[in-house]
Length: 160
Image 1 (cartoon, rainbow, N blue to C red):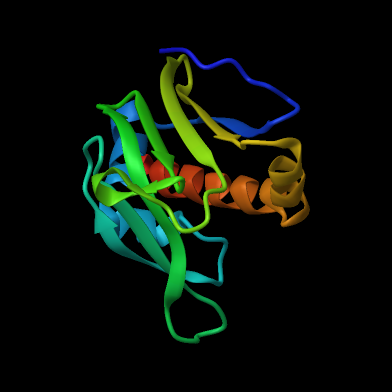
Image 2: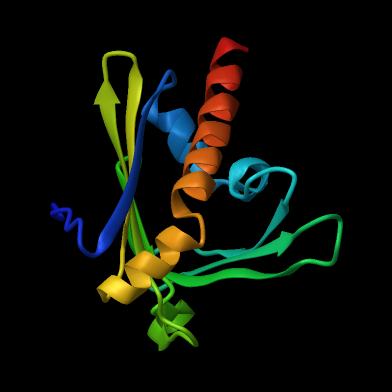
């Protein structure tokens, strides 16, 4: 399924990573790896739940400045297509239960590229106000930073 980008409602980050799709997929779908890059450093991440199937839980916790871990993302996977696409939303939580504060749906796509992997994260919002709020919260700084951290991790692993 292809989703068209709507600049009035969606935000996106793309990058070519010098690593195969399998490496990028592992970094997204292995809790230990996700914890290394999912939040902008120096914040720390813990994966509370990662049930990689439609309807499965995706929950992460955040610790800033060495403080206690608190909820970060409470979401539900909508699609899990091996080495190609992950879709999750905070509109739902595991088991298709309604989320507490619906805000966004994220679509992560991985495609082959001559240099490695063409990576795209599209984050969709229900209205312009939510999109603008996410942008004001630092979407581009945050998502660009974690995308760079992901690229650094998988590229470093590829070099061995």
